[in-house]
Length: 493
Ligand SMILES: Cc1cc2nc3c(=O)[nH]c(=O)nc-3n(C[C@H](O)[C@H](O)[C@H](O)COP(=O)(O)OP(=O)(O)OC[C@H]3O[C@@H](n4cnc5c(N)ncnc54)[C@H](O)[C@@H]3O)c2cc1C
Image (cartoon, rainbow, N blue to C red; front, side):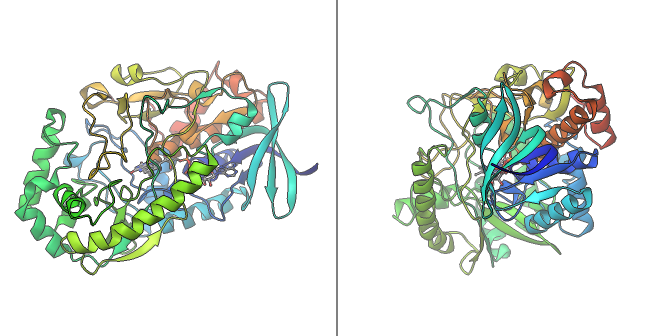
């Protein structure tokens, strides 16, 4: 087979995490190639799947910043280009306080950073298999317009989100048992504009209970956040002030969704609620990412994946007239952008040398080989979202056990969760960082940091002539470089 080239680091998957990994490896001097099946990089941040690159999760619920590093580098650059909202006001900082950015400029910025760092891009290319000697991965096989070829690497970073390449390398994994638990539904995302926000503001002032999403209602844990929302709504001039100040990151429209449903004007698989995105110069647009969802769709099965794409498009066609008819201020709103495909939150759970579990969240566990902080909660016994509860996209099943770090704190992600069990020469990053089924991973800013750690780790391994597993015995240099680049590894709850 034709060998395309020999590299220090081969990154498969140009999502937020893979791109961060490639840039970080190249900055550490590694000869790096980034392989991506689409024509652009950024993955779920801008190309497929969700949202307005929310930049939630920068803080824990104690208000401490827990994510820095490459995530903040991107945020700061976008802010300087007037492509990002201000950070949430200090008094509003928590896990879900957003700092939305312009995702299209975000995607362009990633190209610039790849160019500056010297990352070689191989786009429109699907990685289809690995080359292995014994248990050691030595490269990947790819297919593109030039044919089938091998790309050889001293370290391969698996950042495909779905883990197709890790699975082919023989990394053990598990998947949710669908006979016992609903799959978190994949969804297609669309953006709109043309909302009359004054009308929307008047609606919420007249129906203040609607500013609290159903999953926050009657829940003591959210009382503090809910009270803050009521007060801010009362005092604001525009509902968008609440977004700009970091008080809300979404509008749920619970009552109006149920009205539309009762009148037969909406499909039952999602709701009319939305997140937001920021556009250069200050425009804020709604981003609907829970409005078209594929129920019971396993995206590791190509027939289900394709049928899901068809089904979610059908739902968008139903939902947009419902948005225009039912949501106050959206009468003349229009579609401005659709992502190129649906993307999944669930999928394969790869097994690493350490597999994160919910007890790590309960204990706000700290590890000596920490490479990142995280404050995301987990749902034991079911997904965060549901496509089988008509009128709401969130999973309101009362039997689910919610795990949150105590005292609004955070837990550590250890380097060992990036090293796949039983396989040499490979690192996992992004959505593939090793966690059990109950432990959710849909966190974009966090995935960027994990990518940065994987890229630096790979470069260190190449420099020292050791394997990613051998690096586990001493991660001091990795941590030092991460800290030097602004990563937050200590000093927070
Ligand atoms: C519907 C939905 C809503 C979400 N909402 C939020 C939110 O509000 N806030 C938040 O912080 N996070 C959210 N997330 C999670 C967040 O978007 C993801 O966790 C994060 O983007 C994952 O990044 P990644 O780099 O691991 O994967 P991806 O961004 O999926 O990147 C993987 C890349 O690999 C490429 N690829 C795949 N297979 C191959 C192959 N064989 N060869 C070559 N390339 C390949 C893909 O094209 C893609 O570009 C959401 C996710 C989903 C699905």
